[in-house]
Length: 101
Image 1 (cartoon, rainbow, N blue to C red):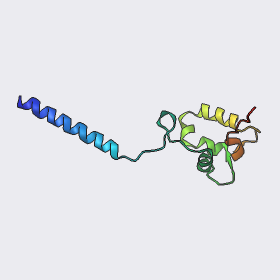
Image 2 (image 1 turned 90 degrees about the horizontal axis):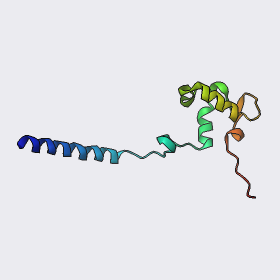
Image 3 (image 1 turned 45 degrees about the horizontal axis):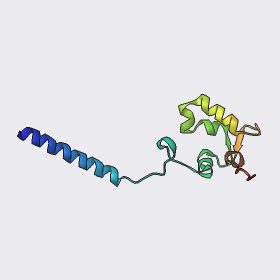
Image 4 (image 1 turned 90 degrees about the vertical axis):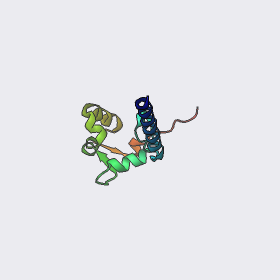
């Protein structure tokens, strides 16, 4: 009986400390699937590593997200590069607002 009581007490104590540790962690702004959510301007600034005002395909492919699936990243780059000049400008990256009918 003492063993069961001791085990339950240890289990309860570990559960309380586990929840307390999660509660103290700073909250991140999260988008879908728990990924950090960045504005298009912030994402553009992160990807434009040489700060020339455009994102080359090499800069885009060097991002952590592109390294996970290079095929999908190359396809996405092609869709984002609307004028097919081999780079993405801030205007191409920023979604256009739809006009009211």
